[in-house]
Image 1 (spheres, rainbow, N blue to C red):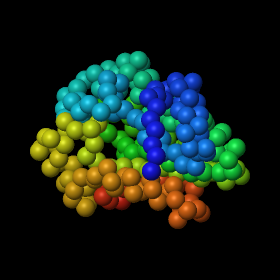
Image 2: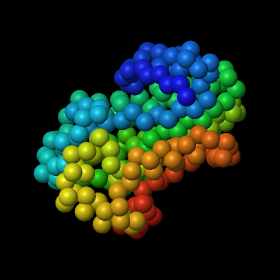
Image 3: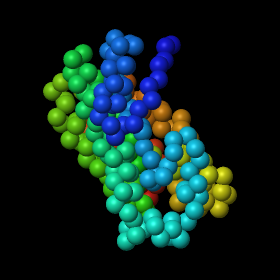
Image 4: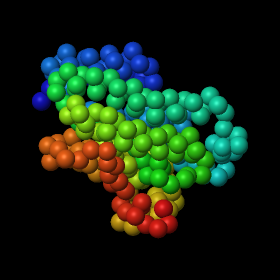
Length: 219
């Protein structure tokens, strides 16, 4: 197969448009998009282990709502919610021109359950869920499906420092009914299904590859 890459800050409209245009220039059309860019907190740097994820948020006063700065709050919202909106908007315009497509937004179980010290993250992911539903009903007439995936605890670079902490892993595994952390492939497979023709009658939905976290009454 063929692949290309474009470095983008998804909170900047012009860069998002350039990304969508680059995809069309490279492949002729845009059939599917997975809006996966996101941060756990304002200081997160992509592809670097998230050191803050390894720390107990109960002990980080600056992460709590009463102490959280507006700048840090806004950065998370800009990337996790506004960035997803801009991505949906830009790729949808390309898909309308080509007769349809599939958009998958990466949400989180945090959009359904509150997490201590993560009000900005939880709010941003709850917003992605409703953005997905609104996009689904607005874009259906263009043959564009919009769905979301809400991961549970997954081994990724964002949680890299945390998943190297045995205590953190043990606690998260105990919270998860299937008694393991998810792998990136678990999320990729859910996205693949939603992008495929196998999901041709599915839109406005959110799938939770979370090991049963949301289904558990404690979540």
